[in-house]
Length: 299
Image (tube, rainbow, N blue to C red; front, side, top):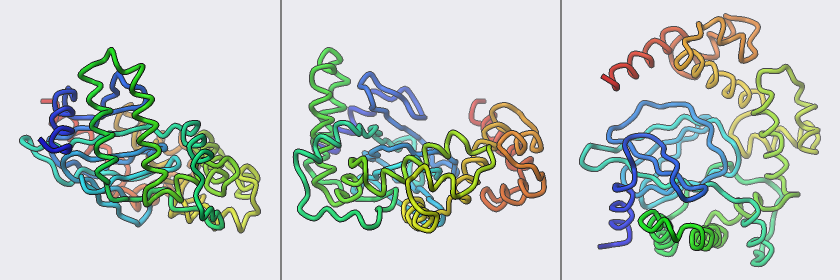
């Protein structure tokens, strides 16, 4: 059995069904889908996503990232994206390993094993795709194998996760990972602003105030923010607002006007325009379609 076949076998035995499932290994989740899915909004936190089976597409702004078992995805900062499983079936479901990035471990590794070229002039994009190396795949197999021996998780999981982070630092995306691990890097400065925006997206704010949080001038902040997120700060905030409004309408049955007001929109017409531009339908129609889809899937 090849390493990839082993990974598929172990994950198949430990996912209870479709969805994202936390495991007994800290920081590790397993994702499964037996069918392709419609594009859904989600906020990616700093993570490694390694697919064992199937294919997925992630849209960050207007940029599409398509990856499968041959490539892994790393998200370096909190990013609002549209994600959809584009290849999956009952016999070969989509299976993905999701590992939270540990900044403390990454920082320690970056100090112990410095790069020869440490250029931080412009932060890397917040999402990168990279070839899955045999070494990384082998470490991923050993990590999920611990689900079969839970008594070993406490002792061995931190060691295997450290090896995986080392592989990321020494891989093709090491520039972005190293920037993330440095507290004074441009990427880390942008990350601080993003964390603030995620907590205050419904409040009115000036770009100058967010730039101050990042410790940059307005023009420098705008340039670096767009390099990381593929969006302007205001577009980023708008996506956070619209994703939360969609959740409120679908999960809590809040009407469109109420959802728009709760996420910070004062004008219902502006909310409707922005919503339709992002999701393709007016708020009420889109929420109704999603609720019907959820009801059909549970019947």
